[in-house]
Amino acid sequence: MKTTETPAPIPAESGASVSKAEVSPARPPRRKREGTVLNVFSHGMLVLWAFMVVMPLLWAVMTSFKDDNSIFSSPWSLPDKLHFDNWARAWTDANMSDYFLNTVLVVGGSLIGTLVLGSMAAYVLARFDFPGNRFIYYLFIGGMSFPIMLALVPLFYVVNNMGLLNTIHGLILVYIAYSLPFTVFFLTAFFRSLPTSVAEAAFVDGASHTRTFFQIMLPMAKPGLISVGIFNFLGQWNQYMLPTVLNTDPDKHVLTQGLVQLAASQGYKGDWSGLFAGLVMAMLPVLAAYIVFQRQVVQGLTAGALK
Amino acid sequence: MQHGKYRFIVGFLAVPLGLYALFVVWPFIQSIYYSFTDWTGLSPEFKMVGVDNYTRMFHDDIFWKSLWHSLLFALLLPLVTISLALFFAFMINAGGRRRKGGPAVTGVRGSSFYKIVYFFPQVLSIAIVALLFAFAYNPDSGAINSLLRGIGLGSVQPLWLGDPNLALWCVMAVLVWSTVGFFVVLFSAGMASIPADLYEAALLDGAGRAGTFFRITLPLLWDTVQSGWVYMGILALGAESFAVVQIMTTGPGGPDYSTTVLVLYVYQKAFRDGQAAYATTIGVALLVVTLLFAAVVMRLGRRERLEF
Image 1 (cartoon, each protein chain N blue to C red):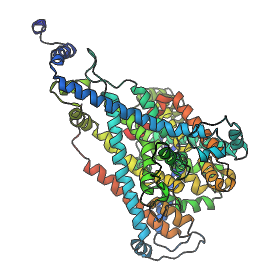
Image 2: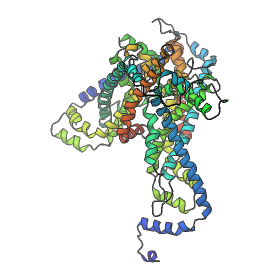
Image 3: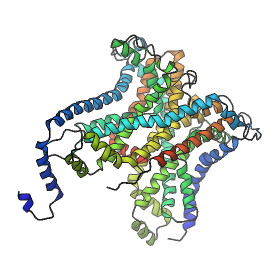
Image 4: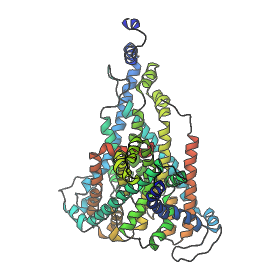
């Protein structure tokens, strides 16, 4: 009764809690039981899917410690002892160390290049008015929805004619070019959302455009750079289609290609346990990085679809 | 701000734009041009042949098969993935038991744990996932058939990737497995921004969980669902279906062309069969399909935007 006497602007919360208190006990019991059944079912589904996600990964880890015979005879049994030699063999004999090094070089180079070139282009497109601005912007954006495979056929010959086929730096340049559409799209929106006053003040104080960009705008854009950087890092680290077409020299293979190559050739060599060790070796760094930088990774990856 | 403005603009745009034009735009233009030639890719000589490649494509059974499979990838895959993800996301965010005095809608216990685990496959390379499942599907020694034997279903031993009727579904299942988590997290973020009083009002009006979902959650999440659909469709038409089909299936694209997709067919024609011009023709078809797909989803899905 007290509530009715309180003056008109009741805070929304107290109003809601009162009505809840009135309604809850009046609920018919039938709905409650239905709710419980539904709860058990939906929780069951959630647990089942979690199990289905983790199972194959654990299975791969377990298999990487088994010997070849038991991999085939009893795929689900635990290893008789931990065969660490599988890992050693994969690292040295199966060239996993080379694939790792190539991947680190390619991704390191292209990630830095993508962020530097992408933010330069995005900054100019976001902050400067000039004829052709919109055209260039949409030219970049268009690249996001075009099937890359269509361009790959002539691209192979473009890259070949420039002498960049099967080279690390050639691959880096191509990775950068194909990462630009999303990077420019994302960072243009980001630079637009930053306040203009700081840059103007710097400019009035006599800083050049270039200096304003590198010393003022880039540090301000750090959160955006981190998001888009993570997005590109995972995309480039996991890239399979571009190197399959443009990087056919086995010595230059990146991780994904190397593993596929290894799987294809295991039919002759028969070192399946080594292959599994290689697979797990390639999975662990990204999974570990994900668990550590979980929040940033999720933000970086979902940023793409939310925009 | 005018001082040296144009010099600065040109200086900053030249390198990224040049790189992009050389490696992305120029090859796209070239490939459309090549689709009207008889270029093999092996020698630099070619001549114009008009629409011969397109006539050939329309009479090519494998092309039609690839097109059909690609369409399945673009339509069915997002449908299954997004439905599953919406269900999980809703359960995680609004499926919790109501506690006395707590908010009207709560997440299940351990919701952040689910979100972390579900996201695992998303950070792995699709190539590695494909390899892993190729082993799991192995009819003799694979994990799946061995599990079936273990639980007393020894008579049910499908060939999985070796069975022309099953292979395509097996491949699709792998993509569902690897993308559901991404959408769960994406939709969760969207659901978290829906104000709780909307749920409270619906509960007061006696809405059940299904009612709450279809009348409140889904309409307010529609924009995210739609752009998610386009995003996944484009991936499923391109890079992702290429990786899974090329790595997992025999042939690749088999058995009996039962899993071939447009993007793989382009690759095979260009880099295996030495028919670069014909490959670009199929690539142009893939381009048309991709753009049509995006346009149709955006158009059909257009609704009045709900503000909240």
